[in-house]
Amino acid sequence: MQKSECHGDTQLRNRVTGNDDQRTSSNPQRKPRTTFQQSKSSSSSSASSPDAAIKVHPRPSDKLNPKTINPFGEQSRAPSAFAAVYSKGGIPCRLVHGSVKHRLQWDSPPENLSFDPLLITLAEGLRETKHPYTFVSKEGFRELLLVRDAPEKAVPLLPRLSPVLKALWYAHSDDEVFERGLNALVQLSVVVGPSLNDHLKHLLTSLFKRLRDKRFKEPITNALQKLEQHGGSGSLIIIKAKIPTYCSICC
Image: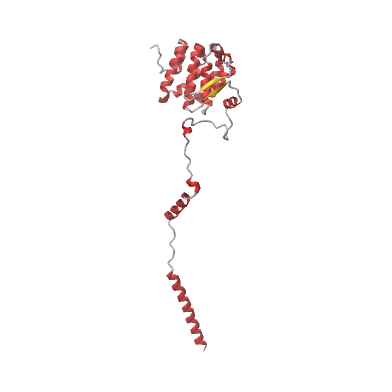
């Protein structure tokens, strides 16, 4: 009697186990997802997200002044000395935006202004790379040297102006800053003439390094010719001593 019961229990277990095996075999195992499928799924899900659908397009105004300073934006660093002076009204002129070109409007006639320290401050502003500081410094420096008594006012400032101009070429890598400094040197030479020769040797040291760059060979050569023209024979001796490859305009 006990054997029959044990036999019946065994058959019952086999029957139950067999059903489980069939049920397990009837369901095929799920294959693991490949790396390509996972990446495709993640990319499709990210593309469908609202953040991915938003694309930032450049504004048309960015092409006009790509480096314009935003006075309302949070600056990543403290403003430069020139920017601080300009924002406090230390430069007695303001920028007037025109439909064709910009211009400066002076608070008083430039001939009535003292060059000390205005001319030096404008020279320091030539290293700026953002609008409106670039235009104000460049145009203000040029217009100030056009006044009638500019030579008498500019010559005493040469010992302080020369290091400022030299720093534009030596310590700054921006090409536009270099060109503004080169133009300022020529403008200063036209006004002060041979008085610049005493400071020319230190200025030419930085120019000679840039002369090796083919992009600046022509503008530097033109500037040297202007320096020789307004500085006289004394300037030619200094130029030839610092830049032996220079050809005089008198040749």
